[in-house]
Image (tube, rainbow, N blue to C red):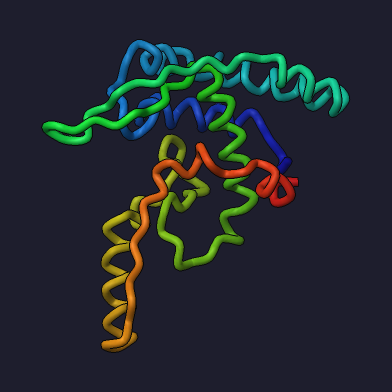
Length: 178
């Protein structure tokens, strides 16, 4: 695991405070709690991380496997008549996992392919985690430019990986995080 610091959890709390749980849910009382207690919640998350790091790998793995990470499955509107299922995670775990994600993103962002537009990590941004210049729209515009430059034989394939996280094998990603 890359070097994890208190600042990673502080930044996670600031991001949730500024942008909410995720991009599909409205701001609620959990987001308000995080907004008012950013430093305290970040400190608790970091203390938990340090406790796990200070213990043996086997004992830490046991502790994690015995925990219940509370989450709710909710319906979120996708337009005037549509809905999608989203997951709302407990505020503590939201900060904890986002803090770890920020540490990982810091370590791996420079290794990412420059053609990838989705969720490009912004190394210095306080509550902004992602580079807004690397958006879905920017990706689509770049795809059109690349297709036009490739001539009439170009083939464009578009996919939606919205359920990616539910199906990825953690075993295939863990070697990249060590």
